[in-house]
Amino acid sequence: MSDGVVRVSRETSGRKGKSVTVIRGLALDAPALALLGRQLKTTCGSGGTVKDGVIEVQGDHGERVIGFLRTQGWIVKRAGG
Image (cartoon, rainbow, N blue to C red):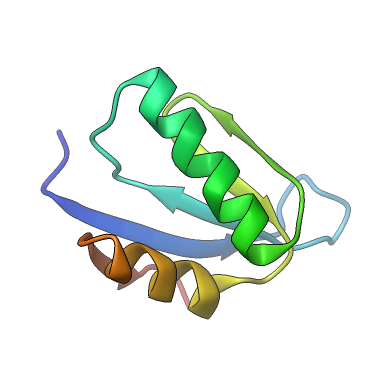
């Protein structure tokens, strides 16, 4: 299902107006995804979660996340508005 492109978007729906940076399209197993999630949360200095193959980082950290993932060798696109 994944086309090899990681998509980073910002969502607020269902979160009482608070923004969350959402990272989708990572073709990793659960332990590797959890490790990457921890690295992203540390990089952004924020909380977050990893569930259903999606990483969520609290706050609007799109540019920081995109920069970090590109340094790790991922092909990254900004999704959504």
